[in-house]
Image 1 (cartoon, helix red, strand yellow):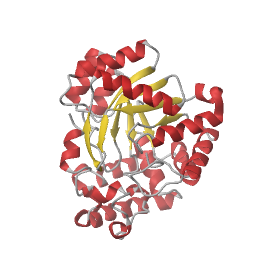
Image 2 (cartoon, helix red, strand yellow):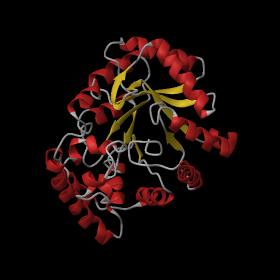
Image 3 (tube, helix red, strand yellow):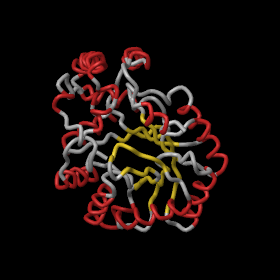
Image 4 (cartoon, helix red, strand yellow):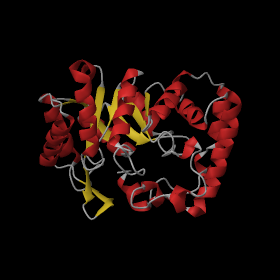
Length: 316
């Protein structure tokens, strides 16, 4: 997502170089959505796929999403659409932008509260039967919705925010997915950059509200920022003696949580691709992970992860 919008300015040439390096060093899971840059991100990924040819495409898991509808006058105001004709329209448009005939994992990005879930899932099932998509996924849904959906179709993956400072899914959804054989894909595993220790108390005064979603999120607001920065400073104090970054320690903590957990840090540059990849090879003492569990207990974080309306849309 960050290669197209929401986290400040981006550069397609830089992004394409990072994508090329990602493949060279072994990344094989590429996650996009039709709403990232209003199609820009899928088009960008399509350029990358074209540069690497069919053999590379065959070795990838290509994931995209549909269902979020953005207000043309305000990109931060979103609704959802799960109607069957819209599902098909979105899928065909994504296939064209990506330049492929098949999307390996296709997610409902947000549940439409005004559309029966069986209508949306029925449309996805038909796309699967036609070979347009492979696995079916859901994003940011409640446990009740997940169970209801899984009783109707085989849900292969659930994508939700999960990191040291966003642990909402840890106690119910994560184990439920394990019992149902559903993979969990953790987005924003570095807290939208917060856990990298590269955000400071000047963030709100320096970031552009028109380009950076984080200026609208409660945890980045002045009344919460300093408290949360203190937690990250403690994270850095724990990582530095090990010769690793706070981001690497945060990713290592997440990777040890469950075997059915897939982590997708939104790296935008080659430097951070390499740094994040190294986190998968770290050998961290279990006692340190337990210390992090306590330090970043949910009640220790100041502010919700989203404003109220968006939070409600993400838990239906």
